[in-house]
Image (cartoon, rainbow, N blue to C red):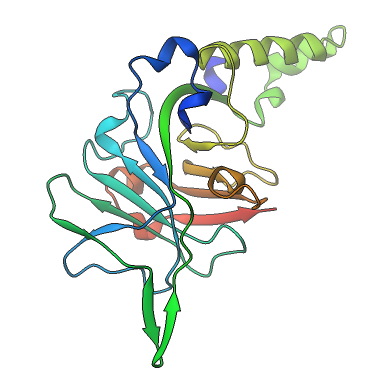
Length: 234
């Protein structure tokens, strides 16, 4: 089982943290809101909304098996209500002077406004994820074929995953790293690993999409975010 598992961080509202972890909880992310950007950097050209800001320095060290910046903020701009034509991930290093950008702009002389989602503060919760193809391994297939113990295995896996998150895994949430919990074909296959997975309802309760960002470990570590791939599932 451990060979087909990967650690992740769930980003959840304070009220969804296990009681035992609330006293020392430190905010690490925010959905929605307006971006604070360095001088000379504006909204992405496609005017995608800001859906997630991650305070890298507030993430628990060593909690992931992908390499994220040790400080600063990761800003994720993408559409969550329909398939995005373009998406952007930016890293703003710690200490960089920034200014909050307005949501209004002009296009052909007409006033326009970028979609802005209600901001919500999120807290990190360590978790464990399993490969969707884990039951195709020879050992697991042999176990299942020897007496049809699928229900027992389901219960064991759920107990392990719940325990890894302090008692209960969150449902609708944002996830950093780990294996995806996709609604369709998983995009994190081959050399691609999950950077972030965002349930639309974790950002706007009325949006029923799953939004996934994947890339190679090398591109994520080197901050070559222009090489990332984005997928929306409904």
